[in-house]
Image (tube, rainbow over all chains, first blue to last red; front, side):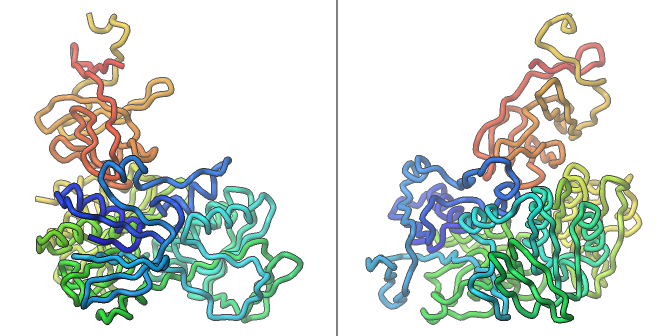
Length: 405
Length: 107
């Protein structure tokens, strides 16, 4: 068994393969020169904490040894020969596989505009990226975040809490356009503005110049912002090149069936790099999310051992913004009907009902204690395809658990 | 009497917590989560998940399992045993007892 990519999905798969009884050789290949680590803290704790924190490891070296997982770090895969079940690594060595898991993740999308090599423009994906960004955030310094998505807003929250002056420039007409319903995005915007983040929507960046060890961000309308750090968070691109070169079918990521097998039955994929048909939504989706990566790694590992288990988890996302949490279960479409549940000072939840009354998504923003349980019960309702009463959903005195039966 | 025993600390009126109910209890620098099982028994474990410092009071109870509200690690709250990754370190469990209508835990 060979796993390419030692992020959340790949590492989870390696551990699960052993736990489910695989006794043969097990190789985990990572292109970073460190042990597998958790990425969620990179935009939060790693940027905020007083003293530079180390990476939060997914697995200790002792545990890797105990499980007999052969971890090859600092290496990438150059090609896959599917006819002979062989991989070639960047160090020149060849590796045979019986089953292969591609957990190659995604990489930050670059701005499609000119910027000077000397300008302090950064993207955030790896621990090394986070340490570099941490160095560029200082009290009284200027940070410009390009892109009002999850990564951008989390870095904005972290930077402003470190005493930097922060401006978010978003080309769209509101924040979090892809993932979050408009009223919730508005709450999050208010929260950021109250804590001192300047937010400019409809602001298109034209170019970024280097200027005396700082960056000058030039907007299409002529306005400029000087910055010690320009953080670009404009989405990610799935890493499909290896799979594509090997002749696997690609469709918004490595195209999988519901058991997470690719167009080659010996090759599976998991996490940000793949797309898969979801029975709840009747279409092929690709998710960029921590929990999805972890759960897909687990299911893919099970299926690499010969099971045929479909991956049917309800999509779930979370983002920390200051002391509050955003959690989203399910996927919402434009035509779904919103039902608001107001938790007062503790937060707000929006449920989304499809035309047939079925609950398809729920989104909560507020204190973790107030919203997490409710989003979890909503997730269960979505998974069971329930059509709860809208009045009950709207009434905060009704325990959502009572709607599960 | 339990109330005079040094290690036992009063938490709340026992009937303040319904079956499957969860309660946060802070005592000095320490924090605990108190769970009443579907059968009506009381249990107490450390309040923070052993994976990251997230309080378990926001998590759901399913049978004898409490789940972390953030990353979905889970614990058997009767023993504190970690059951689901990313939680892999067990939590300390504490004796709980009802005396004269009041819930006490031994800490």
